[in-house]
Every structure is written in C-alpha cells, then in structure tokens.
Length: 116
Image (cartoon, rainbow, N blue to C red; front, top):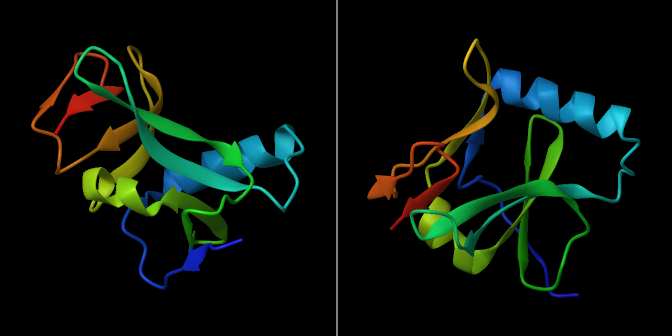
C-alpha cells in the first residue's frame, strides 16, 4: 500500500466534532483499523458534495491524526479541502456536522455541497 503519512493536517476538527466522532465510533463499534475518511465527490446541488465516514486506508490516501482520530484523505482532494474546518452543531434548525470551507466559491442552502 502506498499511503502517505503527513504531520500537519490540511483540515481541522473542532472539539465538539471530535467528541461526536469518538462517540459515533464507539457506539457503532468501528474497529481501530478504520480512520475517518474526509473527501469530496461529484454531485450535490452546487457541483461537489462532502464525504465523511469511517473507512480503511486506501493506496492513494494521505494519513494524519487530529486529537487521537486518524484521518484519511486522497491527496487530490486536498486541493478542494485545504483549510477546511469540520464542526458539530446542535440547534433548533440544524443538528450534525458542518463544513467551513475557504475554497468553496459557492455553497448550497443545506451546506453539504459546494462549487470550487
């Protein structure tokens, strides 16, 4: 496998996002061999949508750690995600992970897709 381990993470996770990710991993009994995959895929109402979920490392992945969470990202995706912050919000109208992406030129109303 040709994964690349990097020391400085291209994204950040807020303390509340880290807390929720650790809770989800424990509740769903996700093995330690899985890391948090962060990426993009074509689609969504603005052109790209975010990928966020636990997965095994793949050959083209960069691997880094944020507060005890192993994060996996395809190197090509860092072009779209560098500097992004993932947060967890819990409010009256919204509950879940949010993405604050400085590379997004436009986002949709749901905040789950963007254009670059």
